[in-house]
Each structure stands twice: as structure tokens, then as C-alpha cells.
Length: 72
Image 1 (tube, rainbow, N blue to C red):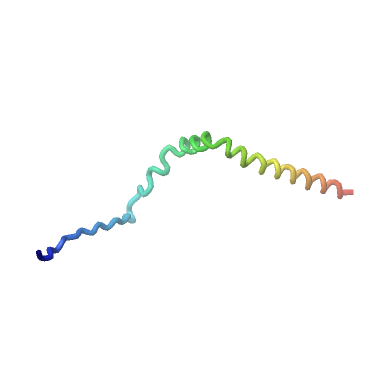
Image 2 (image 1 turned 120 degrees about the vertical axis):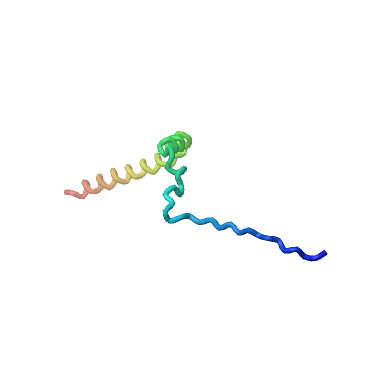
């Protein structure tokens, strides 16, 4: 049995510089996607942002109190 050559076809994918719709599905229904993500993860976001906002407000209050204490 002899060797028979096999024809191969190479497919090259490229984006045209004139192509305008590279990722059209990314921007479709963006407010709906954001609402869905927020409504799914609201408890995680609350547990993350709650302590951060609380700590920041405590530090700002403490700095303001210290600033007023050293005023006189």
C-alpha cells in the first residue's frame, strides 16, 4: 500500500478593519443585564459595602472630632 497525499484546507479567520460589529451581543440589553446581576448579588454587595461605608464614615467623624478638639 502506497502513501496517498491528503489535501488539507487551511482556514484563516481575521477581522476586517471595516467591520463595525465585533461584539454586538455585549451591548444588547445592558441595563437589563446590570439589573439582573445586582438583583442576584445584592446580599453579597451589601455585606461587602456595609462595613466599608461604616468604617469610612467612622474615620471621617473621628478626624473631624479630632480636628475640632485641637482648634482651641
